[in-house]
Length: 145
Image (cartoon, rainbow, N blue to C red):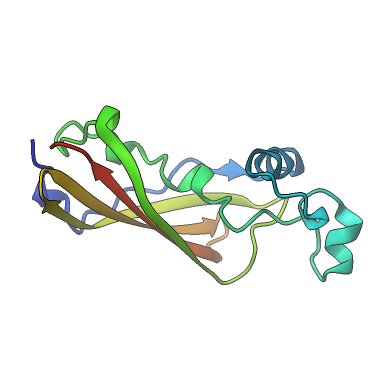
């Protein structure tokens, strides 16, 4: 079934605040196999010019695709058939331990590619104070739609 094109351009309300902790950063770095000390050691991070440990560049994926609007039944997305297509990040600064972030997502593209549906979701990751940390661009593909 094709995804609902009425969702193109739709933005969803900000996500619930997510507090970025040193533990979550370390767990994510472990999961991706990155041993960089700036992800684990506050002194190493400070020596590199950061106020606290920073998150690996792909960390925002943890919070950026969790918007409940993407689960709206009217969108028609079958998560059981979804594969990851592409992701990229544009940073204004690194994500740091202690940040409390929210994500505001917009569906910017939906199109058919053969029997598949491609959807692009752009997300602003901001602090609760409104500082933009990064924009994420996520492409997901629903197979056999």
